[in-house]
Length: 374
Image 1 (tube, rainbow, N blue to C red):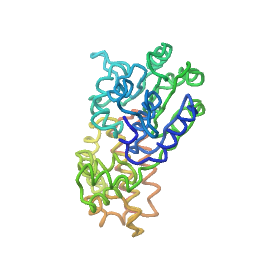
Image 2: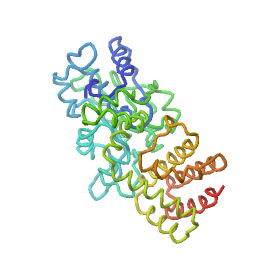
Image 3: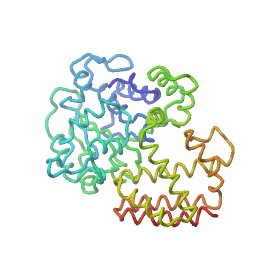
Image 4: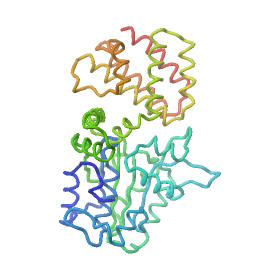
């Protein structure tokens, strides 16, 4: 993957290239920022640049033996760690058991989130984790000699999903890695990584993609009109992943929006039968989808609260969401906004802790019946 293939983020690209030229290559770096801004593509492009045999002034050459292998994500000195689900029947217990799916998935699109990855590997109701056994694999790989590159690169996507015992076993090797070994950790929520790993990494904060870069990509690569491209770029709020989801009008968005509307209407009407039906439906969509839905609800509540301020530039709603908000947004106000956000966050924590999902959503709806009338 080349730097030129990544949308926007020119300041970060320049910084990574400059420090590589200067020979300042920290052995452990933490790429962190919002979902969908290009953190993983940047980490891969940076790794490719470090090992390129004939780098140009601003990018990898894309032609040498190393670059060709990086283009296929199959360089022998490039290693990946990412959340998986154990499938004993298929003998899938560590990341290497999923490496073929991982490579194919990234080649399809380098901008994705955990829910999309887990759906791709058919995780169903399981939550993605980096299991304790993975630490043994990491230590084994990094104990081997470098095959052909200048640097041995270990990219860990979403280290916040590491099992605690896995994270603790890696502390020493992250602090004192073998020669010419570079750890690149890519995180959406870095504060959820254990502090002892955070303190061993140089943090690189990656912010939202510049709006102009998103507009240019949407207009050029997706043949959108300038007006549509600008509208979608605004809704994306710096996340190219959100821009892609808006273009595709994906089924998940429709599903989440319809469920949100049903949940709010049933709660407002205090329709216990409908509330129970909604709870049962949400209880069957899988843990990661349940957490994604609750995150979506928090976003919607925030947007409807801001809608009351009548500041269009601060609102990030698709057309169907905005239409519903015309009548619904007044019900989200200064009296209940904190209560709404607290209850949604609490429900998300309960799902994370494997509490019975039907009970979590039924209880949440009952609390909303009280909040929505305030």
